[in-house]
Image (cartoon, rainbow, N blue to C red):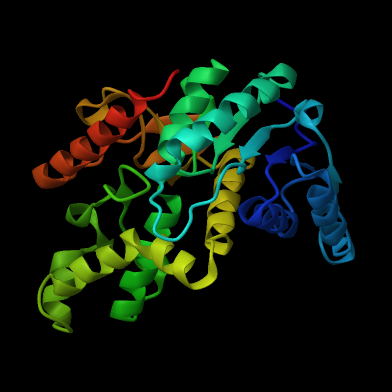
Length: 316
């Protein structure tokens, strides 16, 4: 790890997500040094110039274009590089293209840094988190995927919009794959401690359960809808990544639904999925055992097994 007073982050990939993540971290004030790495050096240089021109408005941070050797000394290396999801394309469709890309990227990172935390953002994020874990040889706690941190935020936002309650007082999780088999944990979702089912009964704002199903559909399909309208998602993704970086660098012990290697949780092994997880300076401190109901457990198992079938097709 870098020294306590130097909080360095490397970002590999300066597309929409990578550059917006860099902007988010610059505004946050938590990072003191940030290097941007991209095959398109001119693009990376342009992003660095643009960011540096706003330096007088933020806390001091050194931002520069670099190459893989500049990963040395980084506390966190964030990987956002890879092929983008196109309209009509699922995250899983990207798997073989981006697995090949990651074999190259990860091998170059670990040549210069074997002490960092690897934070994977590129889709399909759960499979690529597993790929990164296998290629890097890092301890499981130091390989993290952005997972369903954003999906969980979408769930809270939409419940808040529907109920008229501040989303920060809505508590619940999307778990499993960041994708089509993700699972809404309605059995433990609550508004200010009131179980969502009881809250809905008292609210009487809609037919019981109908709006919950509609909300989950909007969460699951959010990326498709945004991509259809503007071509890519990046603002909220970058905010989610910034939240994970905060939890790591501030040693927060925050609970976030990041993706990590499972070793027997819920009967799942040798696959990366998102579950409520304690995140701190070490990376993954602990994956929590959420008291979900049997239906949700079955859906989570289905989600994990669907990813394991895809992993079997990869040459790892």
